[in-house]
Image 1 (tube, one colour):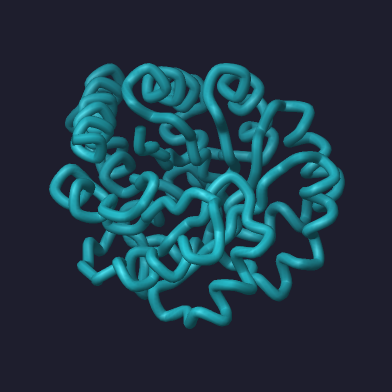
Image 2 (spheres, rainbow, N blue to C red):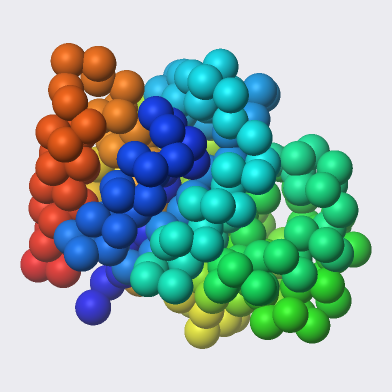
Length: 246
């Protein structure tokens, strides 16, 4: 069974909505939840997720809200924190990972920390049994892929193209997937530009997909009620889970 990871922005439009959405997604095809930490400069994300980050911050999101949300959802769905390094660093990495472990969070996704810097925190993650998700890009050569995937945990995040999330570009991922799988048994999930139209193609040769902008775009639709937003997001995830397993 190929896996579906779904990204949502924590605290948008509010904490209770985030909890309700997360739990609903877990009942509608989502295997792992990527709980996004709002940040003022989300450099790897496109305009959709950036807008949700801005709205959450404007509404008063605080890091403590992430902890409250996590306490409600992590016992019920496999949950990762996705965020940029600055807020995590400000909290203190050792204290952060201790808190994550206590809450039942299973790992972090930090897109702006390169492999060379991430190594400095390897033991902190390992000692707590937490994953620090490894990124691979289509431009990485085989030697680098061998290096950065050697200690990969949980899954490898294969960026579908060079750029930002949500732009939907197409790229032949078969060569890089073959390289990764020659050197590791860690599952490989494809992210960036995954939606109902592209999921079947992007999952070829991979073990799962990561969908973000397609969901967050629904959250930004002010013409929908919160109930309608949750229903539409769940329809998207059900469809994608079906598509990647056909």
